[in-house]
Length: 121
Image (cartoon, rainbow, N blue to C red; front, side):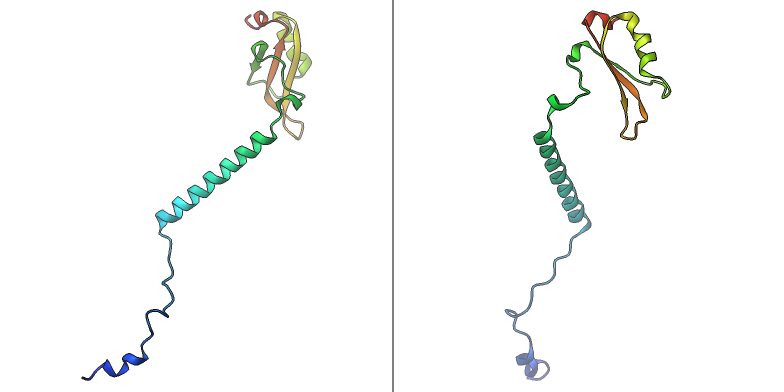
């Protein structure tokens, strides 16, 4: 016998061979990233639910059935002008013109009337 037979004793033992590194395919990487994003989103939702305290929100209205949502308000419109325009329909309990953290108006408001019937004008 000639050839490789004399070198067989120099070969590495298959038991001592380290396992082949496993590489991710594109599909596996996408699935892994999607799963990580879903887990992170689920965690954030759980944390948000745990820390959510609607009773502590000072700008929340007391009754949603008496609250009117007004959108597309000009950014220069003031609360007094908005109150003057909508008070003709009935007594306003609370008017909230929404602003961003920098104090700039967001362009929408919540108007809470004293009676539900006042909202339809």
